[in-house]
Image (tube, rainbow, N blue to C red; front, side, top):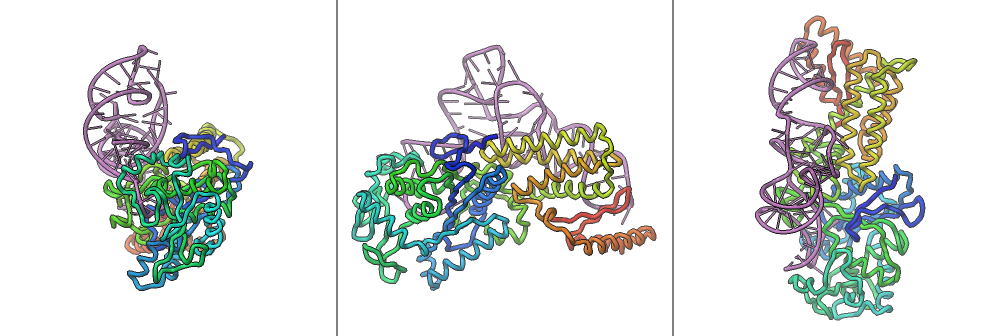
Length: 477
RNA sequence: GCCGGGAUAGCCUAGAGGCGAGGCGGCGGACUGCAGAUCCGCUUUACGGGGGUUCAACUCCCCCUCCCGGCUCCA
């Protein structure tokens, strides 16, 4: 089945066809590293992580690049406030960002180009634009002359005349036209700077993505993504620069943008001060709960942040983990499948059809919210099968387990279950404790029995007493 | 002003011209020393309002109300 993606450029869902067969080259706009990563960032990067994982699952080889803006007005301003060196400040938050991404199980990009490591390439790019007549030098920097690029506005559906009415277009000292944007900023005293044909200065914001993406992914590539807030002006300007420079259109085939995280009806952002950092959240919730929370909503829709919502996600994920643990326990007493009965056919069919619907949902513009449904249906079917059937058949149970493993790989979940192997010592000790506790229960020493249960629970092991004795589960959520 | 996205049962999320919504929560039952998990049932005649098209609209068209976002800081 083909994957369909919603392309911001055309405002339509299109069949995804990469430029080179079997390979996807994608670029996701990374953060400006001057502060901690918050849930809004996490939403975007988890969404693109799952998009990337799904494309890999479909058999594509994915080359993924994410940039770091490590020199910029905001970094300089923040550094001035704290008295820190801008470079050190950027390094610090860059490191924090990578730590947060790792904690969230976001697969690392193949290259993380930093602006300060690509100054020469950026200068060359600007020079080329100058040679081609798209750029001019003003007294405070080098500017891109927007009106020379006739396609300007195609991504954000911007009309230049309307834009001027929009009031917030700043004239800027060295600009010829208010809509022009800066490619190279000349340094003011005390600011970080690099040598260039236009004197000492630093790159403008948009130019870095054009330069670095084409360096690693070529003059044309498949996917360029980021938050909704980057459509205009950032991505619009990137298109103008790059297509003006290379002359090749379209520079990027598919533009993907994520919706905002909302807090009580407002966008989560630094300036509003209504943000929660990943670090804070990870103190209260596991990484998988946060991923699950994000994936319960389609990536383009706004996502409302509430504690209750995350709690919901936690409950949901717990339910799935229980089903997986139930599978493991059932497998211990499972039989050779010398014959299948109606129940086996039923469970098999439910797994098969769920797999199909999962893929249909993901093929349809990575609709993770829709893809959740079949997962719960399998969990229900598994639980029903296990309670109904005395001697479950190992083969169907394994089919269910494979299903969850597949989901786990695409969504980046269930690591707590599928990762560990060879912890048999720990398992033996748990079994021993269960035996001791059973003896205590027979003697009706419930106080001590309950204490053992409570202590194990604290360690992430949950005991459940049932008709066939006591079983244990790992609590991974 | 211009451009875009929304309103779905108590709550959260999908979807779609007729055909099972998924989860959470709540209630009742089974199981149980308690807890937990699980099963069965109920909460459930769901789709912002008004027109229209149609044999049939939650879905298509028009209008309206309300909410949100972008319009050179942003993921």
